[in-house]
Length: 296
Image 1 (cartoon, rainbow, N blue to C red):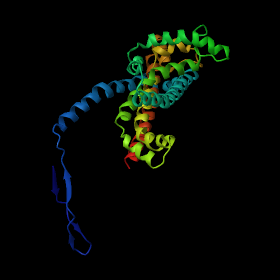
Image 2 (image 1 turned 135 degrees about the vertical axis):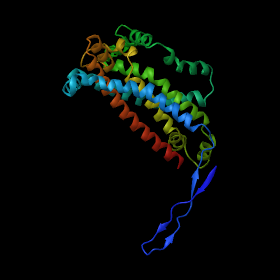
Image 3 (image 1 turned 180 degrees about the horizontal axis):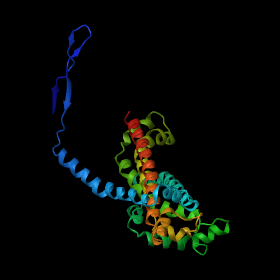
Image 4 (image 1 turned 90 degrees about the horizontal axis):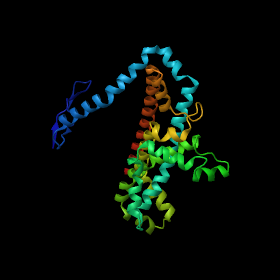
């Protein structure tokens, strides 16, 4: 429902009065906005903001100098670099890989498609420690794939490559499940119209399909990145956990907790939250830009 709302008149310097044009005031036809907003704010306050606020206050027990000293430590800096660098690379790799898998599962009919579709969700249900043990067994120097890679001089397990493999494994379902529903609802008539106008298969994908799937692809990459940054169980088995080389930030937090350095662990946690939040905001802005461009 909409109502006319009168605006205050405009008084010109000469004393003449010109009424402003009336504007529309829009009212939502959906009831319960106050209740919904209240529940949302309570949830964000108690479940999200309150724990993060407590986490942000804990490092100040060691003062600003202690926080700076903790975060500038070479071991901490190396762990943060490994965690965020490899997580970002794994999320970017999952983008085209997840698109290809979602395209195959959506656009083609073949025997075993439903089984393959269910296997995509397996990393969701698999405990992370079990996934880490399985990947280590497979990619260790004595494992089937690790031995083959070692013959050509590639070290998989107990190296940054092993961390990358584990993060690709746990992040792939996020990308596939973000793209698949959008791809199913994509109007094929637009693709057929492009084909009628003489577009090749590659041009249809590049100029019709990819722009429509852009926000979904970026959303899946964001989810995969967020999951990879905090991943612990599946990484510590295959990483080797060598300081300055394959040690991840979540493991370093656990080590500091075992040393009763709670303020130092909280300082690393706050740094991870801040970096992750900044990266996710940037991805969300890019996602909104892609969505706006797709509508226009």
